[in-house]
Length: 106
Length: 116
Image: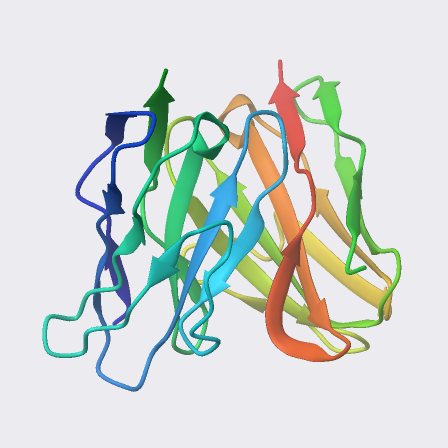
């Protein structure tokens, strides 16, 4: 079975502070992991994928197979980062975590 | 590129009527389209996967006679909620994959269905 856990419903940080959005997964095969973001009144969009190993908008995420985690990190949060973030796993289908609301306060 | 549209964005209907939601890939050919449902303050749940020209594959617990999916072309998939009831009220989101990034899904803006 595929499962994605995002333990925090809401993460509130001040502008300039580091951000870490947690994601843990469960999957017996070799997973593909993604982070999707949904800004206010906008559609869901892909932020990054573990295969690409890239940094998008200052965000990075490293797949840790030992800890079955794919936490999303950014060293300095900006107000425009405020959004809903979903971690997702593709095994034989795309399964989403419950999502974490990130609020960046000025 | 990779834009997916949905129509309508909102629909209100009476109980017992059927509602059709369209999902279109505007600038790429979508070999596969997906339909999700999202309840308030909850995550997206996959309902079904459709490949162009073939029958949709439904997830466990999703009634295929209730949620009719047609993927007649590489740019259009439709979801018809038949004999809608208030418990079908939800946010329905489609996504599409295809083109150069075959394993990336591009999402539509969603359709808010309210059944009275």
